[in-house]
Length: 627
Image (cartoon, rainbow, N blue to C red; front, side):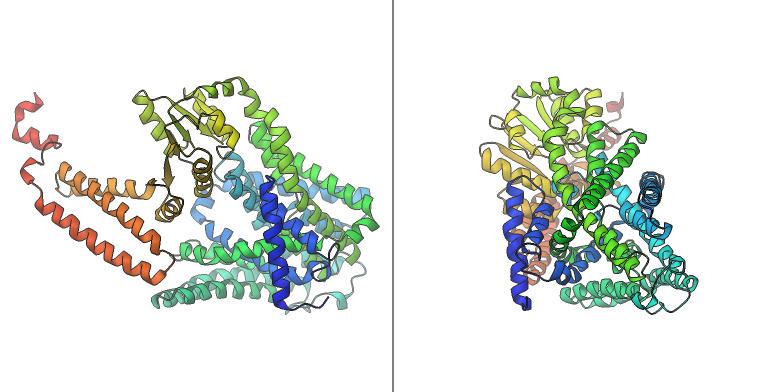
C-alpha cells in the first residue's frame, strides 16, 4: 500500500490516540495500548502500514536509542560503583542462569548447533528495558524494593549487551553453511573475526575519549550562545553521531547511545540533555511499541503455532522461575518478588537487535530468526497482561496484603488527617503530628517499608493511594487534611487530581520536589504546595547567616521573608513558563526585586529587639542566666 509521510503519521497517531486512552480507561498499561494499536493497523489486520511494520520500526528504533541514552545519563558512575555488588549479583545470576539453561535446552531438546543455540539464548536472556521502566514509572514503583531490583537487573543486562555483540562476530567462521554474500556489510565485515572484535572494542573505548575531549567542549561552546534550540540540536547530534559510529562497525546504535550517556553522566550538561531528549524519547518509544505490535506476523505464527506458543510459554516460565529464585536469594517479600519476576519475564528490544545482527552474519537461519522475533514480540505483548492478572487476582491474596488483612480492616477508623507516602518526607510530617497528639491515617505502596514502620510502632496501611476504593476506605470523604507526600511527582499529581475530582471538600497539602513540580500543582489549582529544595536550602542559608554573625532572630525572619517572596514569584512564573524569553526576563526582574525587598526589611528592623532567640548573646549579657 503506497502512502505518503503525512498519511502514515496520521495513521500512527490516530491509532495511538484511540487505543492508549482505552487501555488506560480499562486500567491497563499504556504500553499495551500502543501494542494493540500496532496490531490493529499492522499488515496482519487492517494493513494500513507497511510489511510487518518494517517502515515504522526503522523510524521507531530511535525511541530505543533515545531511551538508552537517557539511561546512560542517569547512570552516575559513583552511584554505580557503590551498587556494584547489588547490580552484578542480581544481574549476573539472571543473565548467566537464563543463558546457560536456554543454551543447553535448545541444544538437547531441539538439536540446534551450539552457535545458533548460544546466540538465541543470549538474545532471549535480556528483558525489555522500555516496557519495565515505563511500567515502573506509570505505577510509581521506581523507589520501591521491586523497582530498585528491576533497575539493577536491567542495568546489568544493558551492560551485558556490549560483550554479547562483541562475541557474536567470533562465531561467524565457526558456522557451517554461512554464506558471506548474505552477511550485512559494514566497514569491517571483510576483516578476520579477531580483527573485527578488536575494532569493536576500540570503537567502544573511543566513545569515552570522544565524550571527554570532543563532545563536552562542543557543548560548552554551544551553551555560550544561550540558544535553546541550538543546544537541543547539539544533543540530538551527539546521539545520532555516536549511534552512527556504532553502526559503521556493525554494532547496535542503541549501544552507542547508552555508552555516550554514561560518558556524559558526570558532565555539567547532564540535566539539560535529559530535558531536551525526554520529549523525543516518549513519542518515539510509543512508535516503537506500535512497531512491535505491527511486526507480529500472524501468518508465521499460524504456520507453526505449536512451536511458537510452546516456546513463548517455556521462555516466560523459565525467566519467571530464575528471577523468582534471584528474589529469594535477596530475601524479597512474596508480593514484591512476584511483581519483580513477572515484570522482567519477557524478552526485550535488545533481542531484536541481537537477532538482526546474528541474521546479518548468517549465524541464525532467516526462517528461525523470524520465528524467534515473533516469540520476542509475543512475550512483550503478554507482559502487561500478566502484570494486570498479577495485580487484580494474585497480589490481593498473597504477601503483605494477605498477612495484614486483619489490620487493614482498621482503616475504617476515620482520622482528620491522611498522609499518602511515608518515606523520609512523609514520616517526618507524621512524627511531628503524632508528637502533638494528632491521629493520622498513613498509606504507603512499599510493602517492605510498611512492615518496617509497623515494627517501629507506626500504624501504616499498604495500598496504592491512587485507587479510589482505598481513599474511600481511608475516610478521605470525611478528612479535613490530605497530605500528598508521595516521592514520585507524577503519581503525586495523579493523586491530587483524584482528590479534587472525588473529594473536593478535603484540603490538600502537596509535596513538590522543585519549582517545576510546583508549576504543575498550580495548574491543577493546588494552593498549598511545599517544595523540598526551597525549605531545606533556606534553612541552611539561615544557619549560614548565623555562622557569619547575624542574630538568629534576624536570620530566621529573613529566611521566612525569602520564602514568602519566592512563593509569590512562583505563582507569577507559572503563568509564563511556556514562553522562555518572557520567563527569563521575569526571573531576572523578580530576583532583583526580592534582593531589594530583603535588604529593606533588614535595615528597617528594630535591631535592639532581635536578641530574643539568641541564648548565647543573653548568656554574655546576663551571666546569671547560666546559673
